[in-house]
Length: 227
Image 1 (cartoon, one colour):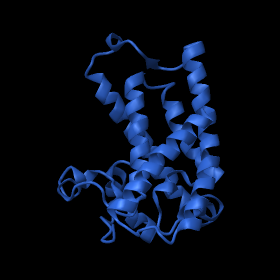
Image 2 (spheres, one colour):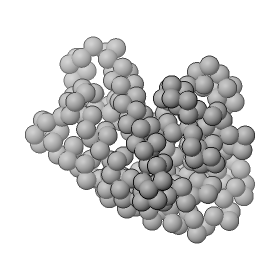
Image 3 (cartoon, rainbow, N blue to C red):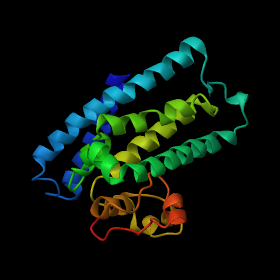
């Protein structure tokens, strides 16, 4: 599972790094040492993420411990997209509050400073975490599969969204259409423009997928003019 997580990282971050180089030529030309550092930290994170993922895979296939199901008739079809939202919202909630906690000075220096050493972040920074921070992120989805039923295909959707958002939010430029980003729907979603401001100002925009908690808690400072 560690190898699979690492391969997913190289495929997704590599693809969007390639897109960045062609869409915004020169954007990361001088960041070679930083990107190599991001890759090293990300491979450590891949090893950490792989452990609970392996437990889940074994528990599901060999022991039937999880709430992952394969038969579409096991739950109403309307539940499939609902389960995706439940997973994303639960993950977003966990991420928001642990992320705010990691911005406390002592915790930041011990854990989160590794991620913020990417200035500006690149597509390779999506998993560039200190091992302690990686642990906080590695347990969420594995914990949910023991609690919330989800079809295996919908779990794949959750993992795909998690991967794509994690990478694209760190590219330093906005790949989604302006019409979407500045729409009413876009006002509740996090994209590169929103997360870039977090990397610029630190004390705002803590969410992962949605702006719900940032808005509710008064930590949403809008979009970065630089992304």
